Image 1: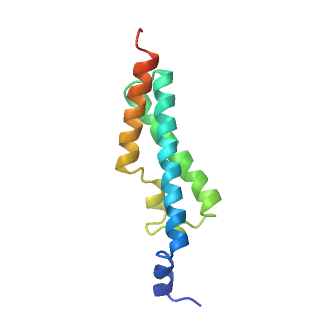
Image 2: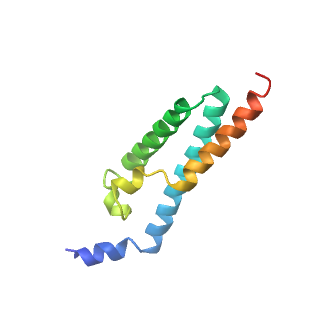
Image 3: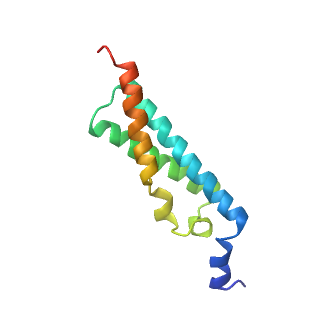
Length: 109
């Protein structure tokens, strides 16, 4: 049996750190894609942020079910709360891509 101290040390194991970095990359790309979709569809105000929230929740669910196999605490320090937290860079990326794609597509509306 592994002690709790061994379980915490496992979170710093290099393959686990690389795995966690790929999870944050997936969340980042998901935010970019959601921003592009919101801009192309011409969503404004809360409708765009609702799409962002739906994107974060669906991405987190897929990561929870597929990558973490239903046990996010085994792979992430914060567990489920860290998995669903969008992060400041993802929010700003969403807004940047949203306004960029909205401006490109709907410039003459």
